[in-house]
Length: 308
Length: 282
Image 1 (spheres, rainbow over the protein chains, first blue to last red):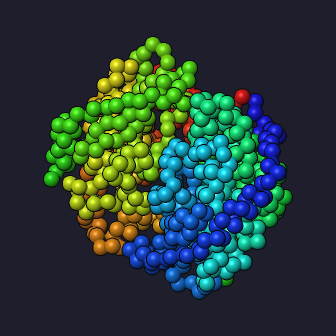
Image 2: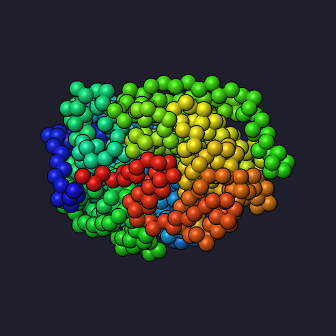
Image 3: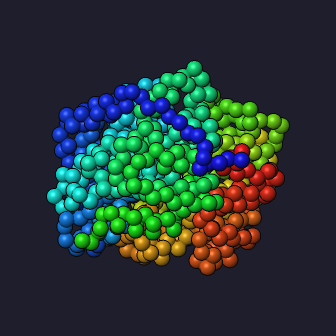
């Protein structure tokens, strides 16, 4: 029988881990952010104004997002970056702006609205150049989310002291990496069923996608296993976790076949920030949805104080 | 155009266009349990759509399972558990990833693409894609024609209604059912697309007319297989349940490990294969 809470999930932290990501951030900073917002009246409502957003990220790629703000509440607003899952396209985050947030739903490279240059498709992102941490497909993808935070920091209507991150699955995993890479800017993180934690352990615990992509890759490239391990160590949430400073909400399904709960518990163990953990028996990758969203909303409201 | 004529025209278009499937082995998905292929085949338009096909190892015929596409840019590859038990075919409809040569669907946007014009509404073509997928799957010699199931949203109901031979239909995440009422409940997508479209100048009557062709309640009487509806609120789904000749309802608990196992076990029982949980216990 599995014992997720006490299972051993270990990832070696590369000696140059921090330098590697500092170089990525420096590359981003070498390009003007150049955010362009275009109001979308047909998508806006009497409560929320919707903008199409474009900005520049790692490697000079233009990245898309949806940006929404409350129509009638006074600025400044607390703000959220909502981070998409592996198979989902970001939806327009009107529901968050109805609650009083400026919300940015980012479409990192490879998502439909940001795939004119980089398009690994589906399946594919998880194993794209997975033998080389410098060119691994997730490198720019991770940094695109960090740059979304920079967009919010650049917005005059956003209170820079009240920026949070929200997502589940891939969105949860990248919430952790983004908070680690922008510890000065992030006030809180709500991360459900976090993906990309214990990346080499997870495929041994499940046959579900996306981790099954790694099993498939190694089935035809068995000699690459060490290079794959070396690469994903740079991207593993367990290695980002010690750098997270913001209060963090984690929620896990104890029967999650997509992101095994062992990896979520391992993340919880290595986070040194203020952490709140909710676990849901008999739940799989939904990790308590839809009911858990009330917990998420309360957590974000506690730290970001919308409506003030 | 009345309901029957609308769909008869789709059938006629499909009948005039050979599917011409091309199967390619997927070495990375080859296991002791199953052999996997990518499939490209022609639907109305003509348009080449895509699917993931897997055939269990051993002496067939095997029960079969068609996954109709979800609302979104991608669909999951059939799970190894399903690949080990069923001839399983997961379709990517026109515009989804891997079926996007010439047309890439927008999200948001797909649900309302040409919705003011029933004859060119995008879901007319998407429904045709599902029907073509059903024809392809049922034509495989490895398939036991007495045990063919379809799983998905309203498209599964539509497919089972318009292609005889499905012995089991598993339905979840309804999209078109009472959509014009459901759109009023929140600003969440995809149904918010209907609200966006109305704000852009369309009318409820126009949407109602087009969506009526896709209303699962209207298709339901033609479904012959046993049907399971997985829903949040059985009262909300009552119209559909009553319209289906052999339906039962599973009220989702939102303990999705439990829900997943129940839905898997129901289909396994209908298909004569063992149930399997995706959460590996030991």
